[in-house]
Length: 78
Length: 78
Length: 147
Length: 147
Image 1 (tube, rainbow over the protein chains, first blue to last red):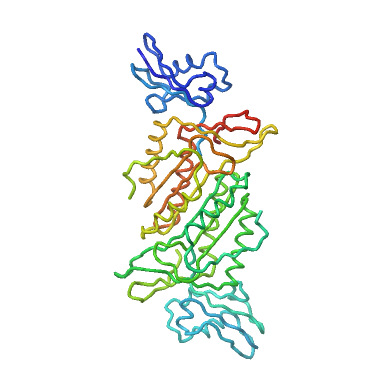
Image 2 (tube, rainbow over the protein chains, first blue to last red; image 1 turned 135 degrees about the vertical axis):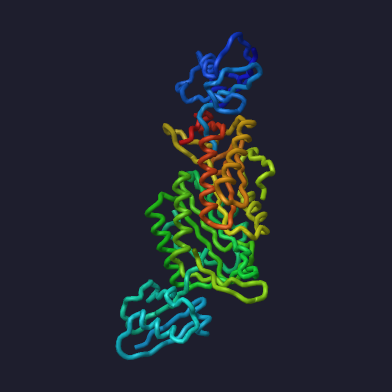
C-alpha cells in the first residue's frame, strides 16, 4: 500500500523534504505513520505536530491505499 | 441673568432657531429652562431631549449667569 | 504614541476610502504593531414608509463633541494597551454608500485592538452629540436615532 | 451576495494598503450595507534573545487551507447576517511593518460585522494550516506559533 506524505514548516525543515511516497504492508493508523516519519528527526515537541488525512485533521483513522497524509506543525496564520 | 441656549437637530428645526440668549430673574434649573424652551414646540418625545450645561450632560444643576445650555435630541453619530 | 496630540475628528462630507489606505500605510513604520482593527460606518438606503433614504446630513454640537471624543480616547488608552487610535466622523451631507465614520486602532495583539475599536464605536454612538437628518428621494426627511 | 463564488485567499507577498481602499470602494454600491469591519495583521519586529525579527516567510498546505477558509466562510455566513466577507492571506516573505492578513466583512448593522470579523480572525488563527518562519536580521530563524 502506498501513501503520499507531505511535510510542512519545521517538520519539512527537520526531515529535509517536503513530500515522499511511502510503501508498506499491513495496516497503519495515521498516528503510527506519524511516529514512523518523525522517528529520528530533531523536533522538540512531537505532540504539537498534527496529522491531516486527505486534508482533514485525523490521527485515529487507519490509512488506505492512495491516502494523502500531511504532518502539520503549529499553525501561524494571520 | 443671561444664558445662551443652543438648539440642535430636530429641536432647532422645531424652534426655527439654532441659538438665542435668554434673560430671566431668580433661579432656574437646567430642566426648568428646557421645559420653558420646548413649551409650544411640536416635538413628540420631549423626554428624549437631553440638556448639556457648559458641554456636560446635566439636567439637575441650577443655572448661573453666562452658562451655555444646549438642547440635544437623540444622538445619531456613526 | 499619538495619545497626547489633540486630534481633529470631524471632516466635511464623506470619508474617502483612500483615507483608510493612507492611514494604514502611515502605520507601517511602527514595527511594534501586530494588528489593526478598523470600523467603517456607511450610509444605508433604508426604506421608511415606502420612501428610500438617499443621504444623511450630519450636524453636531461640535465643541462638546470634540471634548467627548477626547474623553473617549483617554478612556480607551487607559483601558486598552493600544499603540494608536484615530477617529474620523463626517459633518454635512453623506450620500448612501459613502462612509460617515472611520475608527482605526492598532496594537501589538489582535484581541486588544478588536476590543478597543468596539469600545470606540459603542461610546461614539452613545455619547457624542451628533445629529443626522435622513433625506429621502422626495426631499422630505426624518431624524435618525441610534439604537 | 458573494457567498457562493469561490474565492482565492492567498496572495503572494505583502498585502498593499491600497487593496483595502479598493475593497471598501467596491462595496459603496451595496446600499444595504451600514457597517464594515476590517482586521489587518501586520508583521511585528519581535525581539527574541536579543535578535529582532525582520520578516516572516509564510508557507501553507494550500489545498487544505483553501478548503478550511471555505468552511470558515460557510460557518460565518450561517452564524452571522453578513452581506459580504473577504479574506486575504500572504504567502512568501512579508517584511516587518507589512500586512499579512486582511479580513473584511460587511453587514447592515455594526454588531454583526464586528462579531463576524472577530470570528474569522479566531478561526483562521486556530484552523488554517499556515506556517510562519520568523527571520532574524542575522538570517537565522525560528518558527512562529499562534497563541
